[in-house]
Image 1 (cartoon, rainbow, N blue to C red):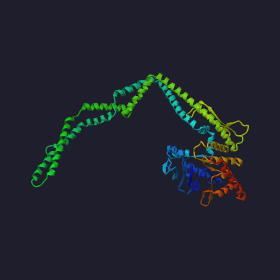
Image 2: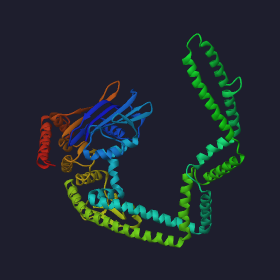
Image 3: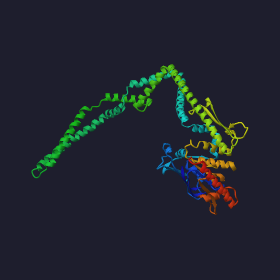
Image 4: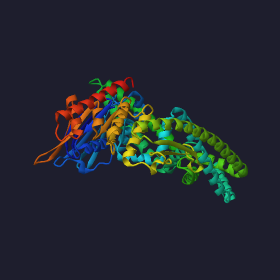
Length: 563
């Protein structure tokens, strides 16, 4: 769940911290107090596009931090998107400064994409824009599929694999038919290329060995000159190293009569032998290392051939060999093209048959799930004040809808008034009705949707009275399976809060600021009294608010125990 929200220098908020709890967290305040700023801050921390105008006037930066405690079932999924929890927590931060945006996850620099992917697993935000997603029929299928559960998911996983195979085979058949007109030309080219590579009889590593030999052969004359000079330096008459060592030994022999030079003499004798052996080795090299123009030309020609093949077929001998194997296979297919097309066509038929079976299975599961879902949703809609609502989920198979998730077209149909024909949701519901319908959907999906935190931004639009109370009851029930954060103007929802935060704006000559206060029970009653519309918080207003709060607590005690 979302444990804490910390905001600094965002719009009117100088600095604020919310320590949230389990269940239903309610935020209330006058219009313009800054409730929307808080939601914008959360969006910002979750990877939304940054606007430098969000930085509070006079401040040099803005900062938002969200602290999540992560349930075990989400840890692996978060790791996959690059957001690994530490000690069961995930801290997402966003800092705006000097036109730059910095994202961090547990202190490590990240990016907006990873933040957004992590957010999709941790939190679900529902405002007017999100409720409009109910008007998209693709969303209807997503909701139904999630409701249907693991059995349908297993079918859809296999269906997606078969669909991809089917589309790959179809594409291959189309490409093959396009190649048919130029088949003989393609066969001739493939045969020529394979023959050219085979005749070269390439060997792995051959090019490197030949290049080394070519360098040695092309520099034979220079090598001979250098080796000859080196040999002369060792055993040349008068100036050679051997001659100079000999002279040194002779002089030391004369000095030996007066002092002991045996250690130096021994070292010089050893050096003399090493120099003599080196001179002999160089001499042998000069006798054998004669320039071989014939071999040089042979090696050069072979390297030219290999380099020519590299330009045409690959940068290495391995790539050239692989290219030849690929062309052999294509040549085989081209030589027996009719049989190849027949085999490919048969594979497509078999793949399509399997795909149809899986689509039919997915359709059956969706139809069964749609019936159960419609009944549950109708009950939930009734609880939310839709007394005459008639709801149905239409699931039709259409070839035009064929895709990796099957060939079903799913549409939510609803009638909100008695005697009216059910129509697509897109043609019936208003903004306020959409909010309640979304709440009804969330209620039905509460035990199937694994996102731990849900935010409702003014879900109370367009409702009041008994309907508002029903909405608050529904939110209390959902709050026992998800952490709920709700921005509201309704006293009925505020009374149902497990944790209640009041957002206030203060104005001075210098600036306007937004402050957020967590309320105790007395504070909650005071705020509920304000929301009830009393001009001043009188004893009767407080009595009404206390009664409403007591009623909410009694409902929670009786209806949410054990959920």
